[in-house]
Image 1 (cartoon, protein in one colour):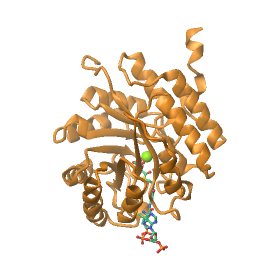
Image 2 (image 1 turned 45 degrees about the vertical axis):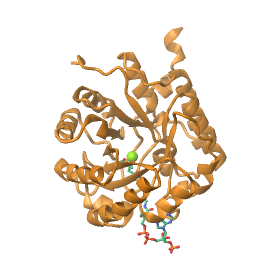
Image 3 (image 1 turned 90 degrees about the vertical axis):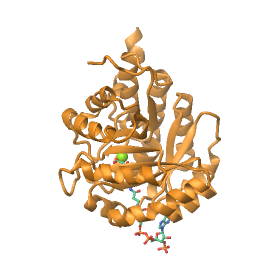
Image 4 (image 1 turned 90 degrees about the horizontal axis):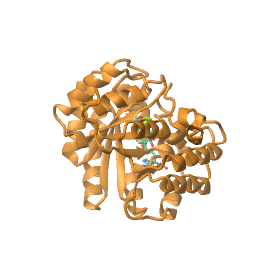
Length: 304
Ligand code: HMG
Ligand code: MG
């Protein structure tokens, strides 16, 4: 095991979006900016900062149009936002964001609850959204949710997710992030899913987006790494959850991922001390203690 570890992996930070969308409090824009700056200072270079979804559906991110222009753009850092439809794309273009994420579920029931459309209707919407984004020189990433299991339908046939991912890539997504939305996945299942996708897609075309509800996310990352995945989503402190997927707890904590990768000699470009400090900022911004293990244990104690 671990004979073919990469030198480096890419981490896609989702705390400002996946994290804050699921908080009971609405975090003020200025505090979001403080967290964003702490994440950039830690070396994160791919940061999903908000969503251009309906403010009625996700009031926590209703300030997306105000937040996005306030963020200083810098070379080497990509900022992105979720975008469900053409109205979202108009907002994304107006805000001059460089990347959007379209999202869809492998489960019909979760998709309907999340975006009020069937899977086919959602894919039809994406044709114009993705083409419009590409025309505006905006990169597009895709998400396929509930691949490991759905809170309404239970086990999902991963072939359904692969069929959707194939269509998203065909429409112009550069990468599809495979979502264990409610954190039910276990390692052998992860191996089956990842191998199925990698039989058809190149490693750089997939990422893993693992919620850590049952403590299996890191184990699933290790399986993904072994199979050739090089892109992982994570959220500082372990913030996160989908408001339209009951039981979806926090994402894999970025600190836990970085600590584990660095310990195995895999580079991330992230400074773990500063990342830990960003976790403290996240904690103060949401006003509650966060579940990440490294966040709780600290990093400095290791060196004394
Ligand atoms: P709808 O109500 O069916 O929308 O919602 P509609 O098209 O019928 O429009 C109704 C009203 O919403 C209209 O306004 C539209 O203008 C407005 P009105 O005429 O009533 O004043 N509207 C919008 N406003 C702002 N921005 C927009 C927009 N679109 C319509 N983009 C919709 C459909 C998709 C908008 C809604 O269902 C929605 O916003 N859903 C978002 C749900 C969401 O954000 N879920 C969490 C993210 S997914 C996730 O967390 C999973 C992930 O992390 C991966 C994983 O973990 O697996 C990505
Ligand atoms: Mg998620």
